[in-house]
Image (cartoon, rainbow, N blue to C red; front, side, top):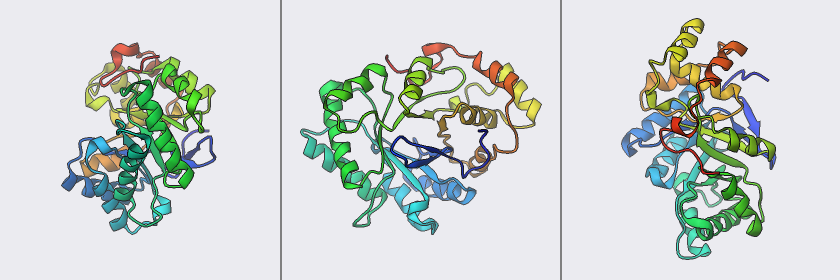
Length: 281
């Protein structure tokens, strides 16, 4: 089904629903992050993606409370990058994030991810067990991974109570389509989130992209976000510019046809097309 509005959601394998368009806050300075999140929520976004590494979880939580929008109507994601000395300590480290984002006694996050596979198989197992505990307690409604390849996800299975992960967040855009891990996730009903969907504006002059944008009378950024939606991914565009925040959500008045999608799909450069990282399968 073609994406129709900002209210569109995808269903995770545990039956929770995730808004298909998210708002990213990577490198958004704390004082600016509150304003940007409030602007995004005012425009109709209901999904905000942060991380311990970003250093702005508390500000995202502050924006949610200031917005006046009921907590249950906003989908909050955060991530943990590395484990502590034990599963218990790792759990406590993750729980601190929950408390920053939702300081109520029964506060929760909607999605908690392992940010990277970089801590090795033992570290990944420790992180996953900590997230499973949050999930069992209802402090994380869903749990998943980021930047994980097929081997990393398969490697969790031996010790996991929850498997497969509900989400895998990876770099995705026409130049980096990561077909192998995408097919694997689709096969296992793992929802795919796309970070860097705008390629950090490095492809704004690409002739193919510009031609598709002109055809529809929209910006290149709007084409890239729409492309992700039509691939059934969850794009997480990031901006601290109120005008661009609004424009990035205004992507429901046009639809990319088969020719457009084919042209964009043909731009794939494999791992070379990544500007952050392609996963290791």
